[in-house]
Image (cartoon, rainbow, N blue to C red; front, side, top):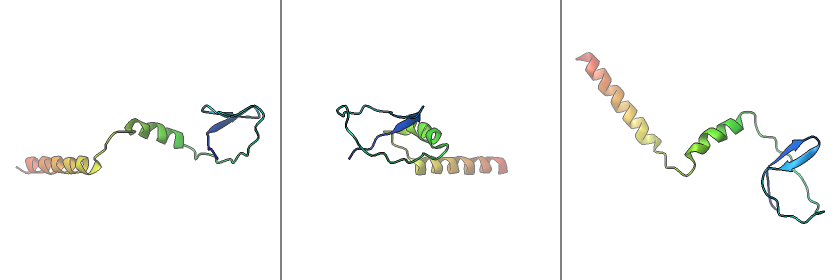
Length: 75
């Protein structure tokens, strides 16, 4: 079994990727509608694909900067 993404246009399911099947082959289709807005989410976070993200380090640096700013304002 292989799963592919399709779009339904003008009464026809059109694959969004190459499909290697012989003409006339029959199969079954299961419809799962994507949640609204998911494509934007996936497109945005796709820019991070294959990159390491260190959220903890980024968060800690922001906290250190904020603490430093507060100390400067008190002095």
